[in-house]
Length: 234
Length: 139
Image 1 (cartoon, helix red, strand yellow):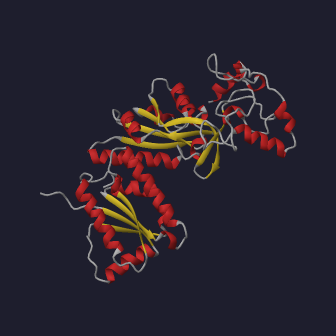
Image 2: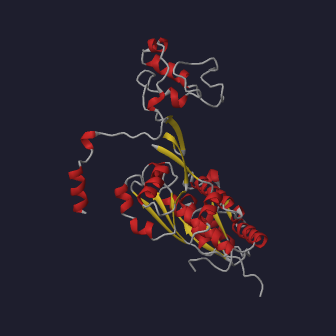
């Protein structure tokens, strides 16, 4: 899932300061799971801003909403009147959610309340760790199910490097060496022969380069006729 | 006219927290009457939202009084309460407010002094950092 973190409150307070009517929109998907932009976080953020305003004798109107998935237009459409009726939308979703609202209503100001961080997984309550960088060419079938690109500090395709010691990385002794973990996993799976295979230099053209990536699936796309039908039906 | 009296909200767990408050009253301990008590099933039930809402709606300071951490009736409720108080403190600090407006205290049910001491500490904090304006939006 996408893991994000709330921006520091002072940064958010500064962003929203010039505006009178502010709609804060959270998301019930990834950012709710990582406790950054769900219903509770939206309420707490608004409350903290109101407390600050109370101390300063200032008044701003806040409205808090949460949509199912802010990165999908259908869900954002449900709160269209709230978006259009505000001076500022503060998105408590990942950057995808904020950009979706911004693309749908380009005349409206949509500011991010979160810093979008990574593709990660919940390791334990309150801990999320990065396990994928979205390189577009997955190799974990060769590395014991562990991504060396995301989890090795040097994103090495062949490892471990000389800086691995006792399962830790030389970059930071708190960090596990990904290639040590890969070795242990392959040994457990009786597939250590893979450690000796040399992986050629990675083709990074599938990763973030040359502008944004767009994936398309022809059979799922609507024909002009279907699009017209859908628009007419609404 | 001088500055108004502090408004303090105390969330007391219904076990040791509330027992110590009741014992304080029965023992004739004196405490500042600006405090309003909210009895909760457990300090761990107090959410950051409750604390912020109290500040938003008119309180100058908020405290949570729970069981002693190693003697919590629900085992980890006081620890949860402390963590949530800590989170709200960090939010207040980030937004430029005084984090000491929010505190966590612990008491055994036999500590008649614990409740008046908590109230007195919070009153001192409000006297030092000032009240939060004339009232909250909810008032």
